[in-house]
Image (cartoon, rainbow, N blue to C red; front, side, top):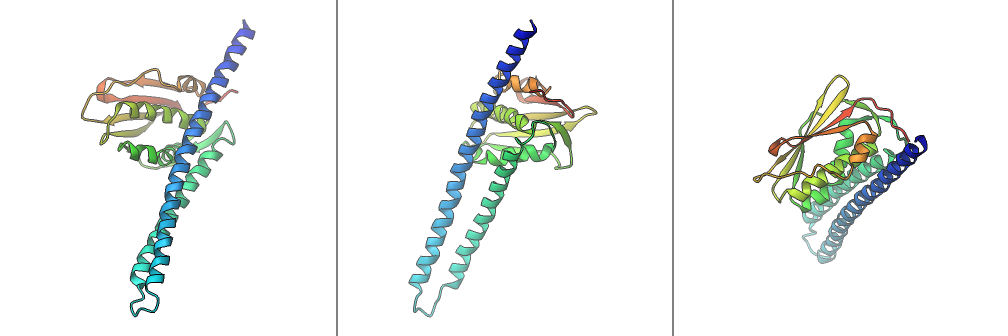
Length: 228
């Protein structure tokens, strides 16, 4: 019996890792598409500056105001790109250690920012309705991000353009509740068999499903020993 149990445990972990790889691939795909858009905007803006310089050659009006405006836009775009790269860098380093102390708010914000392109395409907003305080959890942040990603993906299948998702956090003595609500004109039915159900068990978490607009709640222990 122990041998069978160990085999099943190994299979479950391999299944989770396989799904996590798909999740990581999705995030990288979203990121590279967004980065390409950022690069295109900066390239077009730089080309416009060169055109303005060429047009204004020998002219009393050197077009400094226009050039200044365009270069200011390039600077702003660079700042956005740098911030996005920092989010990806932090996301990647979450996988360095399977067990670590992490800031729950930062982990959620990081994931949402990396998912922004998909959310914008579907015209769905995610409001993080919590104060970004120091709420430290001992566990596996990468697996948690995978779980939250799966939950949001489940909502995206049901919601329509103009709808929204609201995330609240309620801290208890030994657990923290991550609450998901939807803002929609129609009632939705959320699939209770989400893709990350095995991962939820692995980090000692659980999900409570509500009815209608009450959404769902991911209950996460503040301290958990992740086994591998």
